[in-house]
Image (cartoon, rainbow, N blue to C red):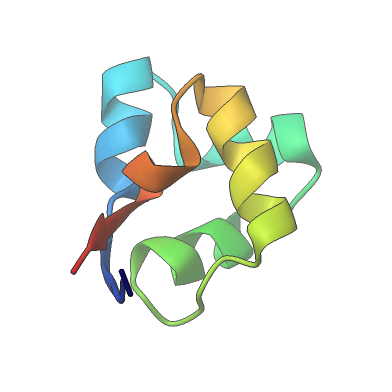
Length: 68
């Protein structure tokens, strides 16, 4: 089965965790702009970044994007 990435769900996962973009950026040592680019679908998360983000948010990697 082939999946395509839909909308990024990172903003929803952040709200559920009670974290802000700045909190996540600080934890991962990323620039907040990079995280905002993911949220706004300007950039697709590389797998390594998605794993780090999912770990920090305590969610599954598959929960970071709508899967079509």
